[in-house]
Length: 233
Image 1 (cartoon, one colour):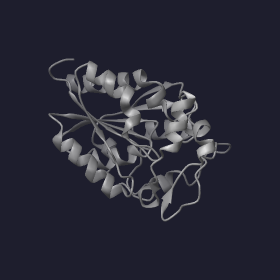
Image 2: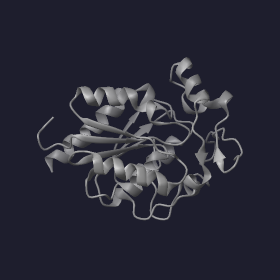
Image 3: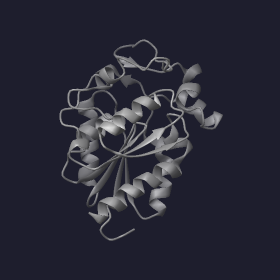
């Protein structure tokens, strides 16, 4: 790692999960000398999650590579305008424009796209059907871990889905995007459209929505590429 490369990475998880899924990516980045912070979003509202993420950015040493998975892409789009953020990396993530939210982005799915098994809201929070979690979210994760992820779900606040981005970071910062080609939560075609709109440096890999769990090396490699490229500028 060059002396000019960004050495801090902040990892932001999405809905239905917590930060523990980043373990594989974390281990690779730490081994390679990065300072890594894993945000634990409450996923209650976009404002709450942005506040938690901004605290992590503030505490990280030096320039930050800010990484978001799934709904975490909305969080990093809003938080990534922070002056300490050198680049934003989207991992099978929503990359909304101004005034867009998860709710607006999923309102008109592509024809034939799989329908995520989201159960009706209870007390303002959403969960995935545990029996269908593995097939939709984590098809390439080992069955015992996919089962654990299903049973340890974090309820996802409807208010978080409806949170609108004000000024997306990808308009002001260089961005990277990893498309998971076998994603059954966010259609790969939608991922490609968002990556193209953001003019993100894009890579595609085979993988489910939980590609950050099943293929941490591919995810870590893209983060390291972003850090190195930022260091050259």
